[in-house]
Length: 144
Image (spheres, rainbow, N blue to C red):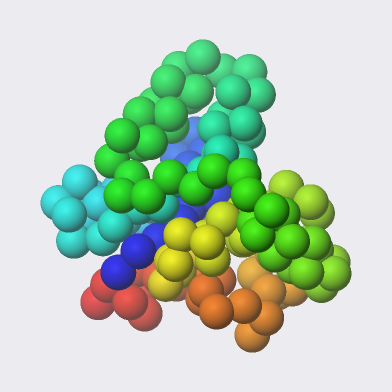
């Protein structure tokens, strides 16, 4: 099983943990990371994650998130096919960066695209070959 985590998913444990949903998503993301380290799940990475992570103003977060790149089994680079797919995905109302993430997940032949962004989840429902869900839903429905 191969997963792609978008940048907001990677950043979830750094968010304010006062809300229950944020704490649950953070714990779920940490469980997914444990499974990646144990080779029970494959991680896909992309040039879009590199780009967004470089823009993170917090050096420690950049370092920790960037460290996941070495554990990825596939690293998607920009190609005409990825850009064409991103244009198709953007037609459902996603921001360009979100569309690029989804296109990269598809190019990496991921089974799941994980995000904490409700708008992405709603807009992508039933649109692509990759299943889009939040990390908590993934842990409950897939890992259990």
